Amino acid sequence: MSDTLIRDLAGVVGAPHVLTAAADVEPYAVDWRKRYFGRPLAVVRPASTLEAAAVVRLCAAARTAIVPQGGNTGLCGGATPDGSGAQVVVSLARMNRVRAVDPVNNTLTVEAGCVLAKVQQAAEEADRLFPLSLAAEGSCTIGGNLATNAGGVQVLRYGNTRDLVLGLEAVLPSGEVWDGLRGLRKDNTGYDLKQLFVGAEGTLGLITAAVLKLFPRPRAQATAFAAVDTPAAAVALLAALQARAGDRLTAFELLAPICLELVEKHYGIAPPLAGRHPQYVLLELSDSDADSDIGGLAERVLGDAIERGLVRDVVIAASVAQARQLWALRENVSEAQAAEGPNIKHDVSLPISRIAEFIELTDAALQRAFPGVRMVTFGHLGDGNLHYNVAHPEGGDLQAFVAWTEKVNALVHDNVASLGGSISAEHGLGQYKRDEILRYKSPLEMQLMRAIKQALDPLGIMNPGKVL
Image (cartoon, rainbow, N blue to C red; front, side, top):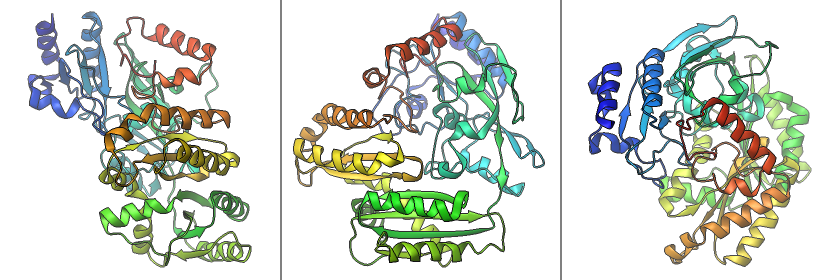
């Protein structure tokens, strides 16, 4: 049966685009963190929606599971096949066209395999902004961003990927194509079907294209890096900026001092402020008016914050190059932490009003339970999303540290749940948190999710073993 399926798939997409040799499939068979290693039957690379639909129909007829894959930059194993050798990875990398740009409607229609940086560039060429921005934007694809409801640094102003999509095209598990590529901001004609697929991690169908929202390009920006005493002071600074700047505040990131130490150690990027401070904030204000005194506004608000004792010290970028240097401190944290050694990652969200309480409570609990661990806390404080990562004790036993993973996760996630938060803010569930979520979602929520899965994918062939 497998030989017949591979032959039929080659008849659809062409033999060069059905990969079966171990060396060819290896890059598609392991996740970015190298936590999950799979063995697919084949990797299939369709070049169009019609080809993708034909691939899904063949797999459905053969009762063969499909694992959709974009840029393979996910952090929870959501795009990695299992080790059975019986699953087909469907890579959307060849489906990478910009189909349409409508600057009057402020929309962009792109295929799922478009790399995020290419989407940003297409918007820029139309003198518009596509605001989704994250560290992996040079390799992640818009289909993967949609499948995981990616967040990034500008959610505070523009929202998650879910908020940036107006229409979708998707191949259903039956092989039928749902064409929902409508660039409408108002369409009150029943269930909002596109939102079923956003964040579903490929378990309900194969996203092949999307209509995305565009915005006016920022003409004036101010980027600042501030030192504060506590996370609570950072939250107070956020409130002060929002009160004075409104939605011109586009990014507000929190960084623990160890983040800067690791970036300087592994990438040679020095912090811009003298001395060592308890916490840091990286923030950005932007305005579509080129004549806006956005820099003056930043100076006034941050000056007031210093007088009020909310800010210890601050630097405001004097040039685009300096702003990029400040952002490099934030964007290299994950890579620097990976270079440092094993770490236990958490992608959590909380009400902004509870973040300081969560950090204080959880830092203390972890130190009591696992003496010497280092909390590499950073993330999008402006929208309540923390990357609360736990690094091994310096000079400690790495094997013993890795063995703590389950207990560390339980402690962190229990505290998140107790404060009304979520154990996955922007990375999804994938395989990594598939079982963990059962501790925190109600039986009714799980029942509803399974009912939706059964209705759309009765054969259970779409990305099995992920999310549910």
